[in-house]
Structures are given as structure tokens and as C-alpha cells.
Length: 436
Ligand SMILES: Nc1nc2c(ncn2[C@@H]2O[C@H](COP(=O)(O)OP(=O)(O)OP(=O)(O)O)[C@@H](O)[C@H]2O)c(=O)[nH]1
Ligand SMILES: [Mg+2]
Image (cartoon, rainbow, N blue to C red):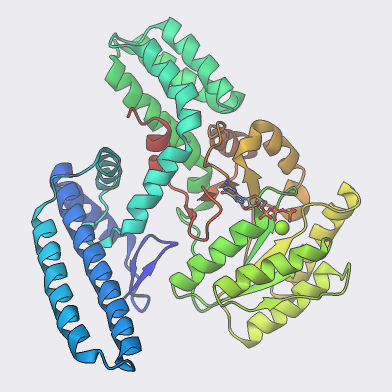
């Protein structure tokens, strides 16, 4: 059993579950009380973590013992090691029963996971950590948006004036005119029908935000972008310079390896000499081969040609293609992308091709407008939003969904190899509107 990071669930890939199975499982799980869920998840994680710590500690002790063997101190050290193990076991046992220190961030995270019917045994420390990071990352966006909103809302029922303020706040958060109108129309209609108190108003708002984010995802026919095992998947990363294409590719390569997919990288940004080196470093970090041509200004389409050949020969699941964000002229860049795309379509017509627009969230709507220039030449199928850590323009996700009409597939919040996860609208909205 492997934890598939793309699907965010344990995956026995010999027998994939039907969606009915998944729905039934969710219904059963959602009956679990969320505090109980949090406690159970916490106890489980703590146990895992402490076992890991114990193991690491024992291993390092063993190593130290090995080193000292030569100095003939072996017998004393063995006694010490045994004492350490028994002490660590005591710590392990005592902390297992002590789960009262559920801290606030952890509680929020588990509430969000439990509300989605996630299974406690499938939740890792990393996932908890990621959600915490996403919430912290969206803090700037949240501060300008939620603090203002909650102040306006107060404890009273919604009024038309509050909705006018909400409109301003959404526009200021870079949500875009289309999404803002859609959300406000729904709220105003609801308000015409009945009195809506502050809590219900917030719940209704969250639902509408998710609706906007989910519309293109639903349209695409699949909730999560998962490479199809046993066939060739080609994912192309496009976007203006510096938005995080190469970093995203590196993180996804690692996600693929952790989830047991075979992967290959094509270094098709041949414009900058350093770009090939950068992508090679990412390849090395996950032990993935990189197909490159180190000749200055080599033809990117030729690199992709070689990479597809290699991917087919090795029966690779996922080929990740890095592209340039800048050429001498914009026109050249568009032509180059089109050429790469033609090569893919001609050479691997059976492949599942994804053309992912990488968007730096800190550039907000301006970045989106700039990026949309790529739409035609790259036949975009989805978006990766990066740099959500510390951006105050997280609301741009709503503009991506409503104006570019593209499904958001992954989000990045940090420069580290594990700082990328599949997009989930519920978690995103909860993080954006978290009260705490
Ligand atoms: N804080 C933060 N930094 C990021 C994130 N993603 C990428 N970066 C940083 O953004 C910078 C540019 O990233 P690259 O991956 O080189 O961007 P690129 O789009 O490939 O750039 P070009 O190849 O020049 O077009 C690097 O310093 C990355 O570490 C993120 O999610 N958070
Ligand atoms: Mg790059």
C-alpha cells in the first residue's frame, strides 16, 4: 500500500476504488465527532512520530556504539544503549495517553480534515503540517479580507450595507469582477428571501467561494489531476519568467516518486544556460533522470522529441517538461511553445497531455492577465498557483477560476521540495476565512 499524494489517499493500485465506495466511506467517516477524530488522529500521529524518533535515536546510538567498538568500550556502551531504549519507551508510553495538548492550529487542521470525511489512518504529520502552513501562508490575504469582513459582519444579521463592503473587500483581495458579482448576486438574492444571521452568512459565503473555485474543476470531469498509471502522461509547465515553473516541476517530480510513479524530466528551457543546471539539481534530489541538451540555445522541441523517445523506451508514467519564461521576444516564446506542443501531439498522440499555467499569486490579477497571453499557444488545461506563503493576493484563485475558467490543480506555499499539494477548494476557503 502506497500513499498516493496526487489522490491524497492510500492506494492499492491493483484495484482502484469506485466513486460509490468512496462516497459511502465518506458518509460513514463524517459521522465521527470531530473532537474524537482530532484526538484519534493526534494520538496516532504522536505515536508514529515517537516511534520514528525512537528508531532514529536507537540508530544513532547504534552508530555511536559501532564507532566506539574499536576503542574497546563496547560493553559499557551496550548497557547505556539498553537504558536509553527503556527510557525512550517510557516517554513513548506516557505521551501516548497524553493528548490534552491539542494546540489551536492542530485543532483547526483536524476540524478541516474531519469535515471532509478524511480517514484518521490516512492523515500524516506532513498533511497536518501542510494545512497549518497553508493557513499561515494565507494570513496576509486573510488579514485584509477576513478581519475587515468580520468587523463589518459583527453579530447582527446581514444588511445590504455589509454586502456592499464585502464587494469592496473581494475586489481588493484580487478575486476579480466576475467572481465578486457572482458571489454578491447569490448573497443579495438570499437576503431578499429571508433574514440571514452572521454565522449563516459566513457559511453561505464559504459555499459560494467553493462553488466558484470548483466550477472549472467540475467542468474538466475530474476532481484531482492524477497521472494515469501504465500510460504516458506529459505535463508541460508554462508561464512568465520567475513565477516558479522549475520549482513546481521539481516538487511534482518528488511527489511522483513518493507516490510510486516513474518519472522523467525534459529540460526544455534552453534559453538560459543556468536553467538546465537548475532542473538537473531538482532531478537529482528525487533521483529522476533529466533529458537535456547543454548546447547554448538548443532547440527545445528537439529536447522534447528526445525526452518522449526516452519516456516511451523506459515506459515512464510521467514526463515533466520545463519551458522558458522569457525569450528575446514574446512572439518567439509563443512560437516555441506551439512547436513543442506540435511535437508532443505528433509523437505521442496517445499521451495524456496537461499544459499547466504556473502563476505567482503575489502578482495577483496583473500576473493572471499577463499569463493568459499563453493560453492560446500552449492550449492550457490547468493552473498551479505558487508563492501562497506570504502573498496578500490569495484571492486571485477566484479570478483564475472565474475569468480564466481554468481548474486549479496544485498550490505551492514555500520553496521546499514538499511545499506543494493538490488543490482542494474546501481547505483553501477554510484557510482563507479562518477566524482564528
Ligand atoms: N516563497 C516561495 N518561493 C517560491 C515558490 N515557488 C517558487 N519560488 C521561488 O521563486 C523563484 C523562481 O522560481 P523558478 O522555479 O526558478 O521560476 P521559473 O518560473 O522557472 O523562472 P524562469 O525559468 O526564469 O522563467 C525561486 O527563487 C524559487 O525558490 C513558493 O511557492 N514560495
Ligand atoms: Mg525555470
